[in-house]
Amino acid sequence: MDHVELRDILVDRIGFKQPTDVSFILDATTLTSDSGRYFEDEHPVVTVRNILATTQEIATDDAGANTLLQSLVKRACIQVVGDVFEVSEISDDILTNRANIFDDCISKRMAINVGELIINSTRSNLTELITKEIQQKIFFELNGNADSSSSRANQNFPTYIGLKSRYGMAIRKLKDSLGQEKMLDVSTFRLPDYDSKDEFLFL
Picture 1 (cartoon, rainbow, N blue to C red):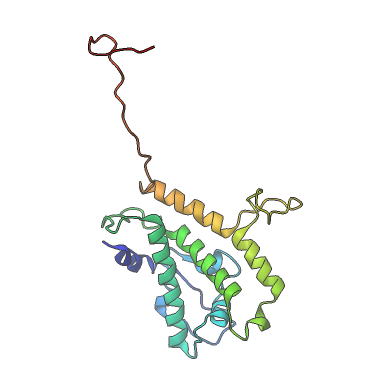
Picture 2 (cartoon, one colour):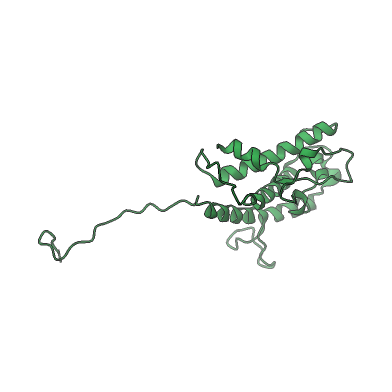
């Protein structure tokens, strides 16, 4: 299968919860969670209300809200697939007996996407919901301060590993379990046979 075919299998792994603070009703597809996991459980910033308030597209009815949320799920899934596989063709039995192996990466990718969506939003009503201070906190949640060599690192605060670093670790773990880690190029050199008359030793 190709990347899109795998994405279409993964989109039902994690779903959204029906929110109580928005008027839109989520449909069965948006709510579907074959894994029993929900995007909102990954990080508090991931809420349907935050998403609908900050996306460039404005949902005006249930159908629009569901289309928008489902497109975000597809985007997160295809990003994960692309980050894991450098090859275009993927084995059809990749999920056999391990349907959950992509769940953690998809959940973390969605949290990153929602955080970036909020930070970069140009919606006029954003300031009513997200203050500059909250944006800075979201930025910190995304990036952390684990890189002590960074000029942004503050030595007065304990090290915090951000969502992007956690996502990177989850991707590396997944690639390793699927045998997708890059192999080092190794050149094999023949050792000299000192018992052979054809070999010479130069001092």
